[in-house]
Image (cartoon, rainbow, N blue to C red; front, side, top):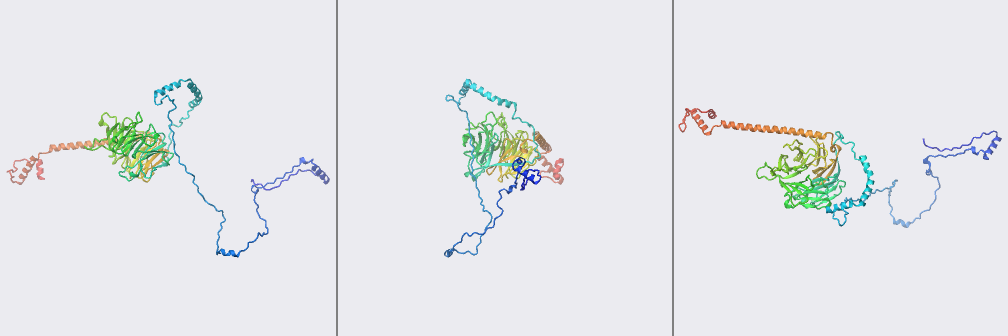
Length: 616
């Protein structure tokens, strides 16, 4: 068993011994060394490991030793007071103390470096394209330059040939879909970005960094009229690094609070914003916290700018804005002195003298000049910037909600369909139909914002005034949200999904921005999802078209019935004077009396109509 007991082993060489005399002789020979080679004497002492180094287990009894005595001093007794009784507690355990130490906390600051073209000779102006081109051609013809390029080409040729032979970016499982239908929908909070100011403001706009979503631009403002916070609150908005929620990565310092803010999808260093005082401003993150361009207040909106969008075109410098003053303005950020174009949102079917409809939300994601505007009257206006006739720039008007249209978004997979948010419902529309094809159930609280998932055609997220974030999945069910989370207690005002469809940023009315991560089932495309959602939307559109055609038919039939009734009534009508005379004659005839003018009614054949009237 691995336990070695103490034992003594002594081995001796066996020697055959005879009689005593012979035994002694043999022993003498052995002692003489001739048998030493045949003898083996070994002594082995073995103990358990725990026996080594053990302390002494007992004490010896000794007699006491007198170390001396204490001399008494009666005079000292008077200096002390006897304590009777005297109690002394002794604990036979070692005394311990507890200490806490917190290490020094360090604040991390992100520092960037901007690289630009340089290294030109002094006689070459880098801003002049002709000079730089001439210098490049001169260098390329130099023999030393050609020799160095050839030498470097031989070094890099091997790795290039290896990359050609093996595709390290090959996607082996392309086209396959993971089945997440059995996985329950879920989301978890990753970070919380809070307004660093003492006076908290509402989150009015959220924009993700277009290249990977590593940053988050958030605009803060308070839109309540004569709010007590307006005098004490700051005008600043902030840009955060998603990996560092403790402090903003950069500040934006406008002259008035920002209501909307959006990154340029073609140049991530540029942002455009709309302010509370009606100004449109352009920002360059490489040039500090101040705006690089600002519109003139005389040429800007007369009300707060509620939404702004970058335009899809050949250049990356055009944008459009809308406001409750009833205008849509187009801008070029290189010269914001005045708008390039403007459009008034006039309602053609309104009463004479009615003013334009105020714009609250804008949707300009499609190219070609077509866009949508959500108004504070609850209507959605389809506009076309490139219409041949100026009067046709304001096109179809959809009767949307009972209150302002807070959010407006096109489906990224099916641009013909768009979603609106207002009052207590979310509605899905088809451009060709004036009524919504799908409408959610009425919620108990206001729905304030919505956004489509960029990776799944049937998924979108909405925020409500009670602080709930709802994630809908129309591919599986349409009557209720697939996931509902209570994110904040004061209400969520804005929501935006990152381009990968994994992260969701939700802004609250108390100035906090929550970054959540959705599960794979809500962020990854499901098998046959795009085809299934397309069939569902087409089916609902056909159903709504049939209902609309039936309603038109019933209205036409009703109008025809009213027209026929009017025609029959006109033919059967008798002039009142003739009818009165017939009634009077019939009356005198029945009574047998003579009228005031000697009319007796004899010889008069009253008409059937007058007889019935007289009887009544």
